[in-house]
Image 1: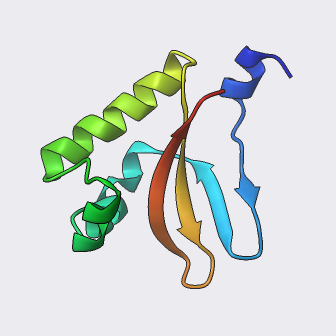
Image 2: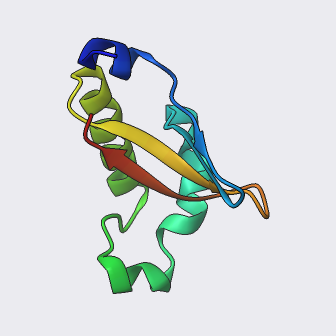
Length: 90
C-alpha cells in the first residue's frame, strides 16, 4: 500500500477492548464530553474549551487531507463510548 492509498482508506483497528476508526467532524460532541476532565491534566491538556476542540479536530482532519497525519477516535468497546483521539503519522 502506498502513501496515497493509506490516507484514502477508511482504516479500522480493533482488539477485544479497543476500536480505532477514522476521526470525523461529527465526533465533536462525544469528544467534548471527555475533553475537559481533570484527569487529562496528567497528560497535558490540549483543549480548554469548544473552540480549542474545534481547532484541534480541524487540524487533525486537515492533516489527513494533506496526508501528513491519520486521525483516529478511540472507542472503549466495554461501554461503546469514545475514550479519546489520536493523530498518527502515515
